[in-house]
Image (cartoon, rainbow, N blue to C red; front, top):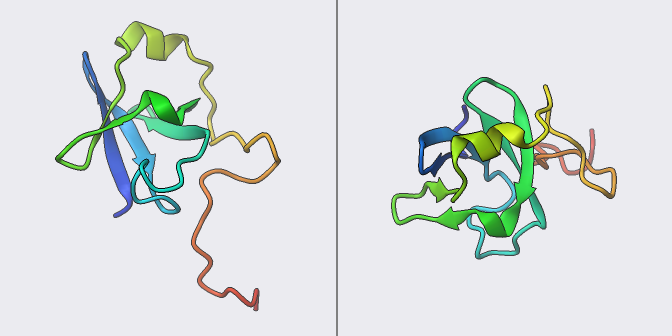
Length: 97
C-alpha cells in the first residue's frame, strides 16, 4: 500500500484498495475503468462509476463479496484497452533521462 492507495469498502467489509496516483478524486477526470487491488493481492478491473467516493476518502463499491469474487482476478493490473499500463505512474523524470 502506498500513500495514494485508498480503501475500497462494500457491504461485506473492506475489499482492497485503489491507487489514485493519477486521479485524486473520481470527480476529477475519471477513467472509464479502475484497477482495484484486492486484499489477497490479486487485481480486478471495475467500471469507475461503480465506485462511490465517501467523506472519509475511501470508496464504496455496492457489490457483495460473492459478486466481487465473480469478477476475473489477475495477478497484476490489466492494461487499459488502449494498451497503457494501469495504474499510470507519476514520472519522476519527465524528460525520460
